[in-house]
Image 1 (cartoon, rainbow, N blue to C red):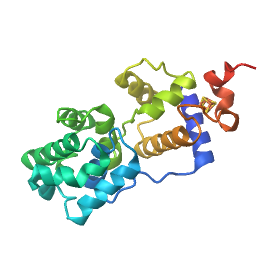
Image 2: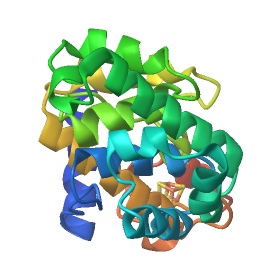
Image 3: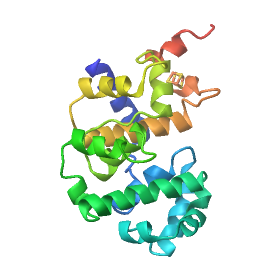
Image 4: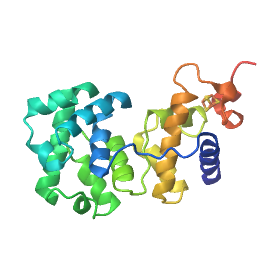
Length: 221
Ligand code: SF4
């Protein structure tokens, strides 16, 4: 399995090149983006981040102190704006109360400790927590998202009924604990899922994984 996962990574990297993720300036912006990107396209997140940037709200202290209605207005382009405004403030207030607003202090614990703290916060599920841990804190954890499930179930490596933690464990247990590898691998999965292995009508004929793909091998001749 290790060989297979590494081979898929190498092929994706050769085909798409390094993705230079995460598209953000600094770890706090990564975290804001990870919360805002839930159930929406990145272009909408960029608009919301632009609004926050324009009023100097990309800092835990400013963000935590904004009136709820004002924050909702600023993040409205990202959709589900009431929920997301609450989630952002929950994160920022926890950071201020428990770590004096310092991400360095939050990230000083072990991967398990920090992950547990993030998962206990309002509206932070495993995918958001792992995105924060990997892209803001550079912990070696794997992000499992809809693209990962789609591609790896089509390849025959996971079952799409498997739970998040099982699939995450599959990657973590077979690959070296290497944050830059996991960073690039997840970014490449997203690229492949968006451009080739699309939800409907994937471009299998042009896919660099077609010779090892279970779904493709079962296609009608
Ligand atoms: S061959 Fe088709 S289904 Fe399989 S990974 Fe490639 S695009 Fe996806």
